[in-house]
Structure formats: C-alpha cells, structure tokens
Image (cartoon, rainbow, N blue to C red; front, side, top):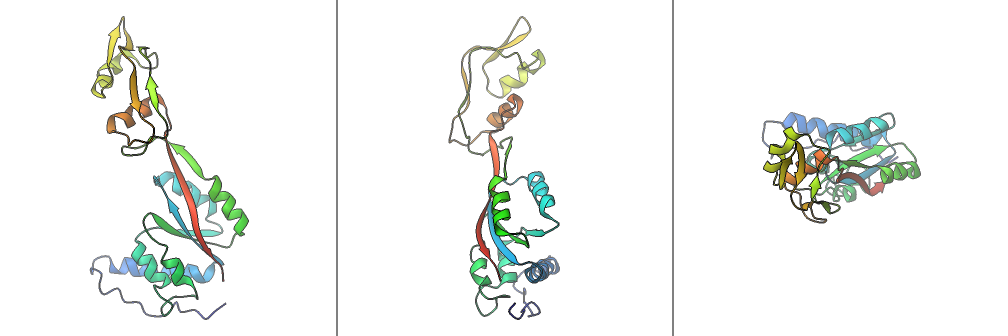
Length: 211
C-alpha cells in the first residue's frame, strides 16, 4: 500500500472557529478509515430517511463505515488534488462529492456490495414536495376506511366530502395526486391516511476505488 499522508497537517482556518474541532475530527476519522478499509465508494441518495439509512448502516457496520455531512469537509479529508491526496487517485473520488452524496468504506467484496446497494430501495410514505410516482384518484362514493370524526379533517385537506347517515362519502371524484408532480402538504397527508407508500429511498453507488 502506498505511503500514508494521513499525518499531513490540514488547515481549516478559513472556516468559522465554532465547529472547527468537529470538522477536524471528521477529517481525521475519514483518513483513519481510508487506511483501515480496502475499498472506498462514493454514493448518492434521494429522499433521505434517517431511520431507513440507520437500518442500512447497522446492517453493514461490522465490515464497513459510512460518512455523511459537508462535501467540502470530506473533500479536504481525501485531498482535492494530487498534491494533497491521502492515497494516490483519491482526489478523483473527492471531485465526485457533489449534492446529496457520501462516502462508504468497506472490506467487503465488490459483488456483494453492489448487490446490497442495488436491492436497497425502501418504500416509505412520501413527504411534501416529493414527486408522485403514480396517479391516485378516489371515486365518488362512501369512504368506509374513515370514521365520521374524520370528515372535518378531510374537508380541510380539500376533499369534497360530506356525512351521509354517519358515513363519510365523496360527492365527486377526487384526484389526490398526479404522477410526476410534487406533492402538496394536503396530498401527502391524505396518502398517509390511505396507506399509500408513494415515496422511496434509493442509494446508488457512483464510484469505487481500491488500493
């Protein structure tokens, strides 16, 4: 393995004093991990769910390590150019840390890692602003899944409902969301009440580097 550059002093003087020690701690942790693990990946994600990601991280913690946070700090840790990279070629990995991205370091075989990441796409309830993956439309008529106490709340969400002999019913067809369009707060609440898991949480590997 090439000679380590981990002990090279890194200056974060341009950052605010507050939080400087925390950032330096992250830099050091990434550099230590880069020496301890055989492979380094850059991954990207959408619709991050802390609980879902925690479950995935726990699944792999015995043989791997994840880093999320400021792309700038992670770039400093790896090196931004050939002159300050901690291992040959890592500055190329650093350049891929853009947008919603993170680092994944592991000793697991490449085929196994790719299989785990490809399979990890958890359905979840969509949030406000998420893009609807399908059109959801409710036909005119009774909504037996809702009790009569829910009728005022449903009306506040924009649903054309009324009580008919104690049963909540739609007085006309109602489109909750359109495929490909962002969800309003009201649409997200209605989908959750209906039990629609209209959101998803994929993680995609973008690049791998081995020693």
